[in-house]
Amino acid sequence: MPDLLQIGGITDDMRDRLAARFTIHQASGDYPAEAITHIVTNGHDGVPADILAACTNAKMAASYGVGYDAIDTDACVARNVIVTHTPDVLNAEVASTTILLMLASFRNFLSDEAHARSGNWEANGNAPLSRSADNRRVGILGMGRIGQAIADKLKAFDAEIHYHTRSPKDVPYTYHDTLVGMAQAVEVLICITPGGPATEHLVNADVMEALGPEGTLINVSRGSVVDEVAMVAALQSGKLGYAALDVFEAEPKIPDALKTMSNVVLLPHVGSATHETRAAMGSLVVDNVLSHLDTGRVLTPVPECVHLNG
Ligand code: NAP
Ligand code: 8YV
Image (cartoon, rainbow, N blue to C red; front, side):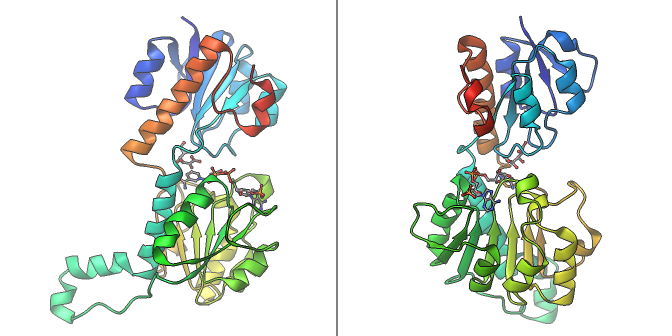
């Protein structure tokens, strides 16, 4: 059987299907680097340069996740290693997580729950009023597969939807050609672009100041898209009102200052983390690997690798 290198964790279903066709080796242990033909990884671990250099006969790297900023696609293309990812199967889940973050922030959901659970309601009376999540002006930074799923779900809350991307899309929402311009026009800014150098710190101090003291920043993209130091400063000074965050610049580290703020909601990068969606992502990873093994072609190459697909 051919040899496959596993970087990071995989589900039992993925292991069962892969083990029927490959000898699986762990990147964390000893592995026969020159025998490896296929690599399975994820959006956090990527394919480290030393592993790519050692696996001289690798033909593909399948990543468990849609975002692949942790993978050096130029280096993979230079070695004819085709990279795949898992688009679309997680759109609805990540959109639901985004809505949950918005609701938790606007409706003080976590402090209200604590108020009920702690006995504070009985001892001290009603919880403070919260902000309505309905009828808000919402700006979406990134109107791709997930951005559009978020916009669809926001319709249930009668949101007025704005967006900023590098080029306008065929969608019925208000386009802004600058991010600062959009931030000035909305009450909520949702980040859902890819990570990587092209989007690093797109959301900077100017953008957060434009969003303003009553504004809410929601980040479900990558921590690198938001200047985290500037965000902490803006939240502390009151130049930015609220933040609801699933992703951070140095995961799994979260700045201590954020952990103590009552105007902040924090999640540990769980945008797609349900049994159902992770199963769908895992299936697509294995479908890509087996398709490559059987036909030489993959199902969902990243855009930079489309030309390598058979
Ligand atoms: P996608 O379909 O490729 O959409 C990306 C969007 O971002 C496009 O509309 C693109 O439009 C825009 N964009 C790219 N670079 C930009 C820039 N410099 N300035 C402004 N807009 C820019 O990707 P997707 O499937 O929706 O996924 C988006 C990202 O979500 C992933 O890459 C990943 O990082 C993140 N994600 C997070 C989680 C989580 O668990 N929190 C889960 C899944 C995905 P233009 O090209 O016209 O600019
Ligand atoms: C996962 C994600 O946490 O798909 C992405 O880009 O951020 C998430 O779905 C991650 O990629 C799992 O490896």
